[in-house]
Amino acid sequence: MRSIFFIFFINFLLSNNLDFDGNNAFNYLKAQCEIGPRHPGSEGHAKLIKYLKSHFTSISDTIEVYNDTINHPVSNKKIEITNLLIRHNIKANERYLFMAHFDTRDRADKDKDPNNINNPIIGANDGASGVALLMEISNYLNKNPLGKIGIDILLVDAEDMGRSGYKDEWGLGTQSFVKTYTGALPKYAICVDMIADKNPIFKIEGFSYQYAKDLVYEIWGIAKDLGYKEFVWQLTGAIYDDHYYYYQGTKVPSIDIIDFDYEHWHTIDDTVENCSPKGLYIVGNVLLEFIYRKDKR
Ligand SMILES: [Zn+2]
Image (cartoon, rainbow, N blue to C red; front, side, top):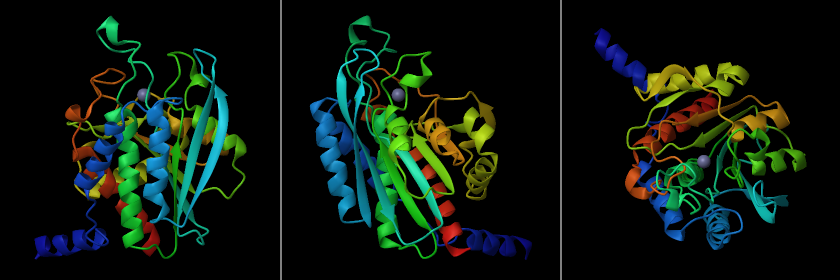
């Protein structure tokens, strides 16, 4: 009896038998990589922006485009950047924001081979994975419309241009966005980055715990309810990712779901072959559960 009750209880918790399509998200990861390197100023960067606009246009309520010009932190050259804000259920006042950077790094400076360190990376995990997940979340929201809450998807540019030790040089797209954006703010922001490792593990990132402890408890709690052991209750170092700059500019509690134990980080081996749909599937289901619990509350 107890076990039957337990099964019913778990089914009740899993609002709608949510089933995020990790394989389709992985196809979006591949499609971005097929474009080639996508750092600001590159041909691939312009193609990617076009590709993203065309993906989101028919499945969301609106897309707002934020253009800016920044200086490259190393070469100091002027570079055009673009942030995209995509909205679902635009009429809702209670909103939650998901963000990911779409740019890739213009130099593989962590590569072991010195001949590679000035070459751009493909960024299958660092760049494409977070965007791929949000592309598929957007598909899901389009097919399963929200009632009470609204979801915003912020795709940011120029996250990955900085030098180690210079914190103001990272998250330049987000830094630009928070300076120019004047609209209503979400209740929480969740950043996803580097989520497609073959052996994903999501520890609790330092700034997330510092600035948005309640949200950390909520997300890691959902992962536990869904039986995902990949979300571990272990604090790890603070990372200057987009959630940090978003929080600094808005004071909206913001977390980063990131798997920083990726051995190919900032190397030319950050490729499709070194990624898998597994982490996309897990994080996708956790975020869908988060969204639809809030919507049905
Ligand atoms: Zn990076």
